[in-house]
Each structure stands twice: as structure tokens, then as C-alpha cells.
Length: 449
Image (cartoon, rainbow, N blue to C red; front, top):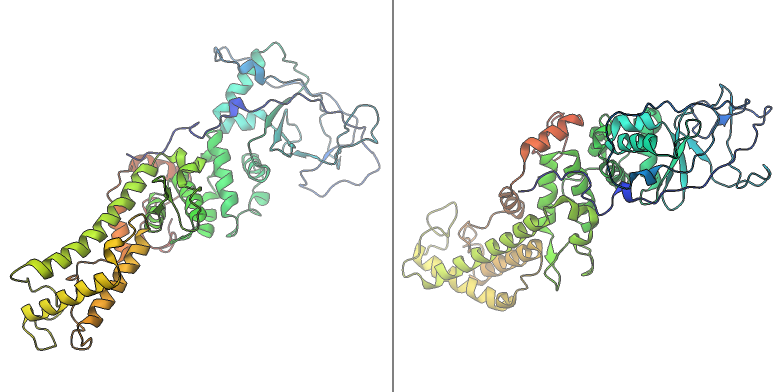
């Protein structure tokens, strides 16, 4: 059964992220400099700093017995800003203010007590640990264990290095949890599919995806494609829709994944446009969903169904002494003015020749259902041509009307998969989706999503 996975299933863990321990020395403020524009995150106080006290009270609860005390980092002094602010630069050393780093401390909360160092770039964000703890149990645990550690200094904030997170994605998350929605919406656009993917990776990393309520519906409507075809688009969209809990969009995306999925030499499922060395199972997010085996089975069943339709049609036409009159669709009598049996024999011979001429017996069954279906359509057209009078047999069908559309076949295959509908529904409603079981062609087409 495909279920919404629990936190921590990605092949990394925030508790194992490298912890930074460098100290930052802030130059004295420049009292005559002009203040930054209102709302700018790159600001700091220009007045004489006063030291703020850590607002935490030690929890009476026992903390976990792991190595969490390593999370308590070397304290970093930071002043409380006043009303007027100036651009912040961070001195590389405490020697002089003239030696400065080129990066800035992005201030999400002027009274923050926690510095997050994000990505390989080492981008620094000043945040409020209590605000983070309201959205993520990881930060609850971090605050508790920091207070219990011998390194605690009530006057000095802490620092966590999150080297595996992406800066832009983490910025969106931090802006959202700190209530800076105007800045968040500048990132919400139809061109930011990958950014939404990375944002959800970050929120899942800290078990705080529900903090995206209020922006997830609009963002998904903008980036969602009802029929993606490229492997990277499919993998990205499946992760997004699965984690947001929109089951209708999940199924529709899996239909595309099944339709264009093929097998590499190792028997692994790969998508359209991917190299043999790029199977879906090597996508960390795809592996974390835990449904790749079910999707691969759907693709295999779809191939089997198509092969069976062709084989049954050929065997029925060539081997049955009495042909069932189901070949002429829409009319009971062939327009070639033949008896039904005679029409069936004509069509049987035409289908046999078409199968031989188009080399059906050597068909590559590791190809995608889309490619196989295209070949079957070519066989059908060739068989009609082989009757010698296409106009006369225009209502005749070599497969007896038993070849459904590719979209319908993919839909039927995906419907055999088992999903925990209640979990999906709870997640979707928590994120603001009014109709999480939506099944139409495009989300939001009926005014709901």
C-alpha cells in the first residue's frame, strides 16, 4: 500500500548536519548612514547594542539520550537592534572593521536568537528559535537540549549549519514561518516548479510541511502540468503532489509516469529523456515516497495488457472455426457486402500480414507503453490497408473494438494501486485544498483544488 511516508525518510537527517562553531564579530554601527528600505532583511541596529537574554526556560522533561548536546554550538554575541537600521556587514576577524566578508546576515527576526548557516554557500539567517519550534519538533528538541547542555550561555545565541539545504528554498520557508508573506509571494510563480520541489524537501526534512498552508494551493495551480512527459518534470511533480496530499494530482502524474516509463538494462524504471544511468530509483525523493515498485508494476501490467489485446485479436481471427461478429463496429454488416465470416477472414489475413511486415514478434517489451501503443496503432492502420479496400472496410476493426485509448488504459492501471486516502485527505485539507480527491483534467478547473 502506498502511504504518506513519515518524517526522516529522506536519506539525510537534520540532526546529522554539520554543526558550525565559528564566531562572528560585528563592527560598530555607523550612526550617520541612511537606513535601509522598510522591510529589508539585510539590516541591523546602528545604536549602541544591548545584550538580550535568552528567553528559554529549561524544560522539566527529560531530553533524548543521543548526541544532541553536540547541537549546542559556540555562542555568538549579537546585539538587540533599535528602530533605525543600517546595512549589516560581518567582519572576518575582530581586528578591524575594515576587513569584511562579502556575505550578509539576512535578518528574519531582529530579536532572533538563532543563526542558521544554509547550503554550501554558507548563507546566514538570523531567526527566532521559538518561531521555528512552533512549526517543527526538531527545533523543539534542539532548544530543549541546548538549554540542558553545559555550553548554555543566556546572553549568546546559537548557530546551526544546514549544509544540505538549498539557500533559496530555505529562505522561502523561513520567510513563511516568520510571517513575511509579501516577500514569499514573489517566489510563487509558474516557472518555479523546481523551487517548490526544494521547498517541500526542506519542510519535509524538518517535518513542517503544514507551514506551507496559504501558499501551496496557489503555487501548485501555477506549476502543475496535467500531462508531463519528461522524467525530471514527472519526478518533481510527483514529489510535490504526494507531499501536499492531493491524491487526484498524484494519480494523474503517475499515469504519465507509467505511460512514458521504460526499463533499462538493469530492469529499473526510467522516464522519457533520461539516460540508462538515471532511473527513478536514484532520485532521493522518489525513493522516499516508497511507491516505485507499485508504479513499475502498473507499467508492466500495461505492457502485458497491450500484448494480450494484439495476441487475442490475431488468434481469434485466425484460429476460431466460427468468428464472433464483433469485428465490424457500429454496423452488423460489412460495407464490403461480405458475410461477417468472410469479412473476419479478410481482416484476419490483413492483420497477420501487418504483424509480419512490422516485425511484431521482435517487439521490444522494455520500451514504454506509449511507444508500444504507437506501434499497435501502426499495425491497425496497416491491417486496414491490407484489406484492399479501406473505404469498404472503414467500419472494420482488427482488434474488435477492444483496444482502449492510451489515456484510459493508464487510468485503469493506476486505479489498481492502493492509497491511504484518509492520510492524503487530512494532509491536503491541512494545507488548504478544498477538494483533495479532485479527478478532472486540471486542478482548479472547476473552481476548486
